[in-house]
Length: 368
Image 1 (tube, rainbow, N blue to C red):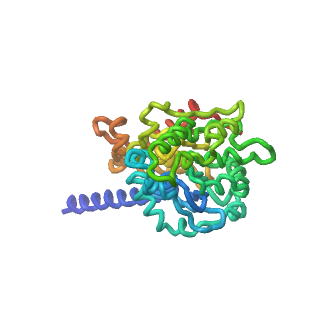
Image 2 (image 1 turned 90 degrees about the vertical axis):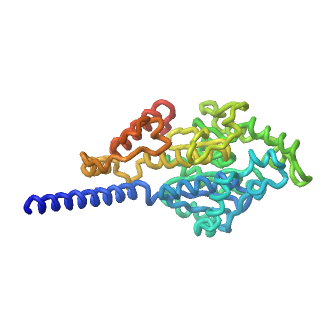
Image 3 (image 1 turned 120 degrees about the vertical axis):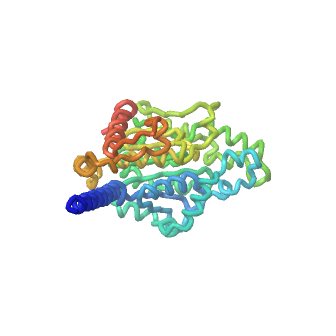
C-alpha cells in the first residue's frame, strides 16, 4: 500500500512539473513575440494586396501587433486589378495578380480593426521612432501609389526610423520611400552606402511589355505597370545607394524564381538582409520577407528582450525533461532530422541563434 501511495505521489509530481514547465514555456514564448508593434504606411488606394496582406497575416500569426497609416487617416484600398485581374487576360492574370493565399489574407485584413482605422501620416511623426518597434514599406505600381511614394511627411518619419537602426522592411516600390528619404542632417539618401534589392528593371519592363501585348481593354496598357514612365525603380534605387552601396537583382530574368511566387510553406523568395534592413523584389517574395522580418525582430536588442535570462530560464525548465523534446517544424525536419528525431527547444533555439549570427557575419554589411 505504501508503495502504491508513493507511486501515485510520484506520478502526480511528474504531471505537476510537466504542467508548470509547459506554462512557463508558453509565457516565455509570449514574452518573446508579443508586444512588438509594427507600422505599415499605405496610400489611400492602389497598394499591392499581396505585399500588405500576406506579411500582415504572417506577422499576426507570430503574435505581433500591426498598425496602419495613410496620408489623411482614411481607410486604404488595394489595387483592384491585382485582386480581380480585369484587363490582364487569362495568362497574365495567373502570374501577376494575387493568388489564393493572398486573396484569403486580404479578405481577413479587410475586417481588421487596425486596417479599418489607420492613423494619418502626421501621427507617425508625433509618436516618433519610440512609438514603434518595426516598419514595413509595401509597394504597388498603379497611380494611386504616388501620394505615398512622394509624401514628405512620410519620408521624414522613415528617415528618422531607419537612422535609429530598428528593423525596417521594404518590398518592390516600397523601397523608393527609403530611397527618397534623407538621412537626418544630410542630403544623402537613407539608403546611401547600403545593400538593397527592389523591383528589378528586367521584371518591371517585362511586365510593361506583356501588358501591352495581352491587355484586354483600352483602359489598361503597359503604362499601368510603370508608376514613373521615365525611370525604373531599380535605376532610382541604384542612384540612391551611391558608389559605396550595392544593388542585388536576385535570380536572373530567365529564372523560375522571377515568375513563381513563394508560399507560407516554401520560403523560396529572394530577400536581402543588411543589418536590421530587409528588402525584397516583388509580391512573389512576400512570405519570405515577413518571416525574415520576424527573425530580425527576434534578434534585435529590444529592451524587453533579455536573451541571456531567457535561455537561462529555458535551461532550468527543460533540462532532462523528456517532454521538452519536440519535433522540428515539418519544413525543417526533412533537412535537419531525416530520421524524425527530436531536439530540445533550447537546443533548437540556440542553434538558430548561432546560424543567424554566422549568416549575418558572412552576408551582412553592418553600418554605424
